[in-house]
Amino acid sequence: TKKDVALMSTGHWAILPNDSAGRAVLFHDSSRRVRLDHKSQMRIMFYLNHVILQNENVAEQGIVGIIHVGTIPVEINQHHLKSVASVQKNNFPYKFHCIHIVPKVPRIFGVEVSVPLALSMFGADDAPWKLHRCTTRQEVLAKLGGQRLQKDGLPDIWGGDWNYEKFIMWQERQVRIEWELPLGVLDDDDGIYSARPLSDLNDGERKERKRRYNILHSRRKRRRDRVETDVLNRQVESLTDKKDELLEDRKCLEHLLQQASRLVDNVGADGSPVSRDDARGCTHGTSLLGGS
Image 1 (cartoon, helix red, strand yellow):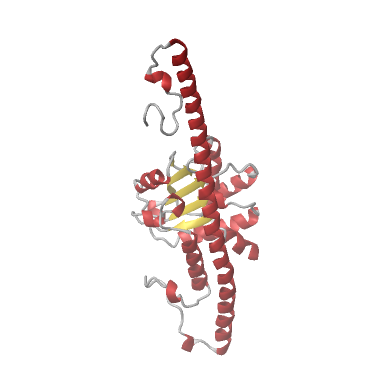
Image 2 (image 1 turned 120 degrees about the vertical axis):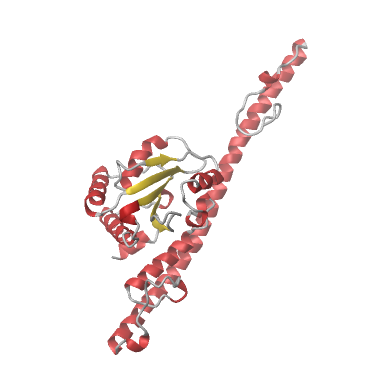
């Protein structure tokens, strides 16, 4: 349905490039999360699982899950989560190799509450998982890189090369395959798919192909607008994080200034020496008196 397509286009669920062992990687980005129609959500999960099962390594090696935890979804429907878990376990013949849970950088507090919810979103309550508490994007990239997840297959929110524009291109490629259209510039020469040449189509099939091309063209314009909006949203998010860091630095410096002022007053009152330990009062950032 149109609602399913719109929900899928948000990119809050995506299939990333395989890891270095050839395992499929399913990514959930809660920062892109919208209020969900649970039936649409279930249909999207069926679709993604169908695509994942095209990877021949899935049945033997399992798949890798990555969850970007932004905010704790307070309106989560517990009954829906149980339904998702039941569908995953009973209908799809694969297991999770591991699920990596990455809280939003640098906000790493309170994630214990969201871990069970995050696992439920994958229907994988009993799957092995790892919580990566990181204070920088570079640290996230390094930790996931140590789990056989490569930079070119990780999202740009952590310094990887995969971004929303690549997700849009993947989505259009999937549509072209399902609608039996030529891939054009989206053909990666893997030899898996090849559309029938135009000369082999009858008049009715040519008209249908033209109609589908027109639909793709109209969708492409909307998706281009979404990519531009996504770039702006990411810039706003980055600037907001920078603002938060600067405000924290300001609080730290104000605290240090107060400490220094009190120390100077004390020295002026009785002339006694001041120890370096007394000069330390803030663990954030660089101390004005004690170095980093």
